Image (cartoon, rainbow, N blue to C red; front, side):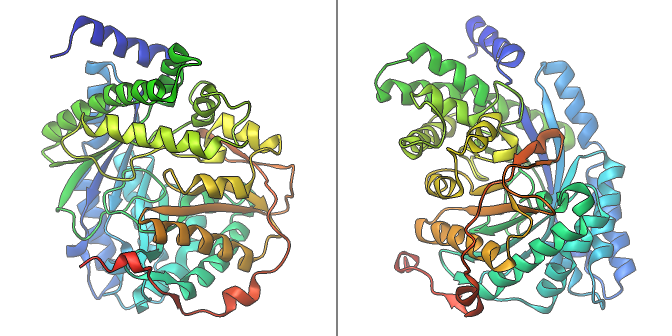
Amino acid sequence: MLTQKDIFQTIDMIDKRHLDIRTITMGISLRDCAHPDMKASCDKIYDKITKRAENLVAVGEQIEREFGIPIVNKRISVTPISMVAEASDTDTYVPFAETLDRAAKTCGVNFIGGFSALVQKGCTKGDRILIESIPEAMARTERVCASVNVGSTRAGINMNAVALMGRIIKDTAKITEDNDGLGCAKLVVFCNAVEDNPFMAGAFHGVGEPECVLNVGVSGPGVVYHALKNVKGRPFDEVAETIKRTAFQITRMGQIVGNEASKRLGVPFGIVDLSLAPTPAVGDSVARILEEMGLETCGIHGTTAALALLNDAVKKGGVMASNHVGGLSGAFIPVSEDEGMIAAAESGVLTLNKLEAMTCVCSVGLDMIAVPGDTSAETISAIIADEAAIGMVNSKTTAVRIIPAPGKTVGDRVEMGGLLGSAPVMPAYNQSSADFIARGGRIPAPLQSLKN
């Protein structure tokens, strides 16, 4: 039972510590919208989304007013479009992306995810058409997010897809160069993608999911940061315990909101994603949490260990507060979306190499990274391959959301606005990985994949 002290603590977290529900995301199956005629399929997709999600924003706003809990984003995820559109006789899936965008605007959500393909073992015709459609789709839509899964612990890494995605990212940056390559901020490349992720840009409604479901993503880096001020200089055991207790409170709020939204929308409640998702706002930074543990600057020696503790404690505390935990559930380190990460990157302390090391112990990967516009497609593919290898070998989800900023170089900034923030352009190696990427084929799955 909630005590008066618990209620006052939660109010203080909301008012002063940036506590919020980062997103309620409705997952919608579009498997019954496949049709040989593209227009008929698009019409079915639009009708189903707008019918299923017509009250999503209104219900979210009702709960905000009644509970006094901010719900920052209301979003939709759908079945990977490559699976739905493959039945249609067409050589481009851009009209499907435009249909998703139109449906998102009608429903009033800020993002819709699922312009996606799962190609960890190989591409079907539909997968390839979708991937080739990504640059134009990202340029012609505002709210559509794309994702491609190129590897898994069970399948290994599809290096042909990795090579292709390097070029697609470069093409997406070029076609959206008037907006600093903004299209790349809506595109993520995964290893071990999960089916119930409520966060963008990687959300899609997996084939193992029900017809419709509601997933919740919580937040609260600012709450954890201020809680750690009470254990300054204390042993790490106490630090971990403090984070666990704080994560429990944050997640419990997500569970309550998810249950209420599910009931009002008449949609099954899926999962709470425990991820600590930062914003560019001061006081809402994962980097500042790590620094509060005793690091002068995020990125110096000790950062990976501090992040490992944070990630583990968040999971242990959160899992006791929710019936169903899922999604990614950890600590995000998106550079452009975290003011502490931005500061550390601009100082030169936080580098791509250190970020890669940090992704071994956190969710999700190299996220919202800007590199010079002349970075080659092969170098981007090699970055993706490295990150996919970390995910494959460690049986965890990893991802790359990278922006080769057109016309910009190290020291410049990429401005994306809102929750996407601004990213300092970070250096990447100039030496070539082209021969490595040109080999193609598949990197075999590791031995730990043989678990049956």
